[in-house]
Amino acid sequence: MDISVIIVNYNTCELTISCIRSVYELTSGIEYEIILVDNHSEDGSLVEIRKQFPEVVIVENKSNLGFGRANNIGADCAKGKYLFLLNSDTILVENVLKKFFLFMEEHTEYASCGCNLIDANGKLTISHGCLPSLFKEFFLLGLYKLLPSYYNNHLSDGQTVLQGNLSDTGYISGADIFVRKEVYDELKGFDEKIFLYFEETDLFYRMKERGYKSCIIDSCKIIHLGGASSSVNVRKMTFYVKSLFYYYRKHHSSVYAKMVKFVLLLRVLLFPMERKRDVLKVVLKS
Image 1 (cartoon, rainbow, N blue to C red):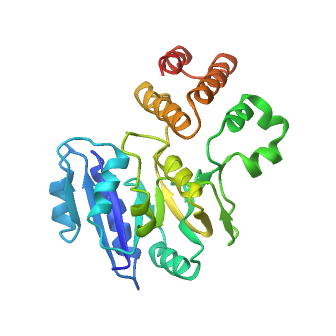
Image 2: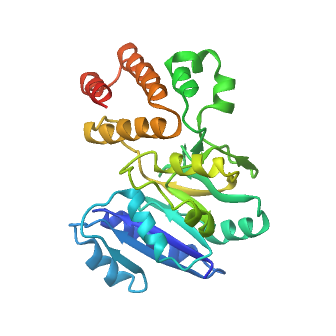
């Protein structure tokens, strides 16, 4: 088996069906399987998916275990040489499985790769980026406006230009991680203490520690429908901030995390944002 495509579903029936359909319609010349890990959906997802795609391997969790743990469960039963961790809100527009496979077979120096992510209108969205750091958080106080070239080249969450080149990167968006299974297994996959957000940055930090390289293939693209809304969801913000501080404490120190917290508080206080009071409470409690 060349590739195991792992898709995590949680009450996203229509999106997941569109994602799976795009894989089947556009993938050829490669041996692959699709593993759907369901986090106890209650929207009838599994009935419909079994009906439309009986060949999909389905793993049913008895509760919502989170994104990282669900992917790890999928990886445990995967048969492929490579894992393709694909968000349920993505749609393939070309035969990326084969392109990724051929690239990784030829470029053994890379442990993982991804591609450009675009929204439904074809506009580039965040595909990869620099690993989180206090320096990066500090730049977000406003220095990125004074030194835009440095920020874009060294610290930003990248929006890759379609130019047919390769871009080495700190991390790849969790929406489309193509990784060697042996590397994923070696690292024991995602940190299951992280329920949501920063799973991929934590994984890629650990990959970098062991000398593994990752890149973006600029000539490929995938539609990513997530993040279309810019409104603040306090529940998601809570997961985001909690995971962010866990990441910093894990890979740096509690003092480092407190310094990041101070910078985040300054950003909340100094810049206009929706539901500022709620966001401030989330940061203070985390």
